[in-house]
Length: 384
View 1: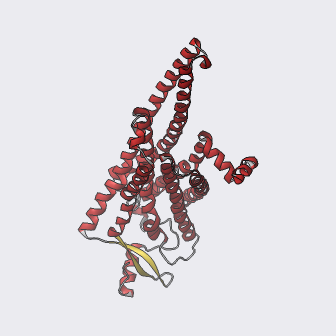
View 2: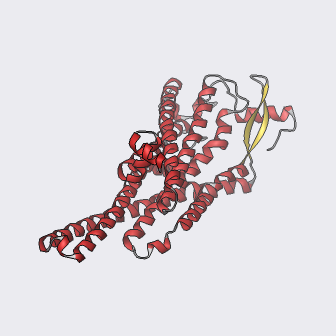
View 3: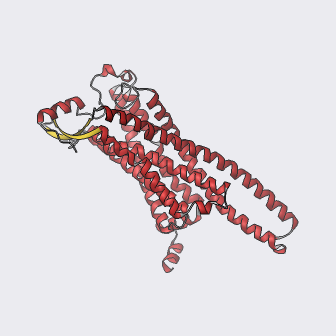
């Protein structure tokens, strides 16, 4: 961490970064430079932003609780099944996203209500939570893509998939995804650095951030934001979308085939009179279990697709329109739009546990024991 060498330099740096400290939301110094001021006044902006913060925090609280329970249930279920590993990784990422979002909301609210913090709320939070949140969203997208792709393989090449998708291989895949999608978020410190700056308005020195204006840092930021912040999540979204469509098509074919086969066999012989028919019934039962897992993945992927579409639009607009960003002339519209689109992630993370509970009998059974909803199962479990 870089420390300012003198109070004079600190004062200059602070003035250059931010001349207004009483209200976090009014980050702009000259209203004439912000065309969006004619759309949203200070009062309207504050009301909308506060509403979004409180709403998002309520949803994030639900996401923290839901994903904590999901992680606990998957730990009790064990990781012998590859799907449990990938779903646990997804729950951990959703939990971390909710925590990062909570950290940002807390700093926003404290600064808005004039609570003196030892750091600049907006700038420091952007580097200690905002950047990580954006890239962790990409991690969630790629884990969802992996889960969807794995189920596609189970449908398309069922005889080979058990050799291709193993618990160890899934664990390694999760580590690779996290390393390639989340870890690059820390490269933001090449472009920005922490400094201690003197705040003349409150007569104290606080932690702030300043941009590194070298040509390499600026070029590096543009390249890695486009690759890691835009291309990666959009590519993952495309994979999830394609795999989900393929899964839905294959599910319909399999369901139609199963109905026709069972109907034909029931018309010929009773299962007890034909051992081959009984064997086929067992195979159908196993495939139905696999089908329930596929349907669960389709539901998870569908919720992800619906919640991620606004983010895709936001990412595209961020690239196409130069001034549509946190520091551009349309920053008010950008901030409001960003908070609206980011609501999709905690909503998706909160709803997943309902899908697990509805579509997975083992998850439902362990969940009931965990929260003591089923006394008889709890007693039986303790006796075992």
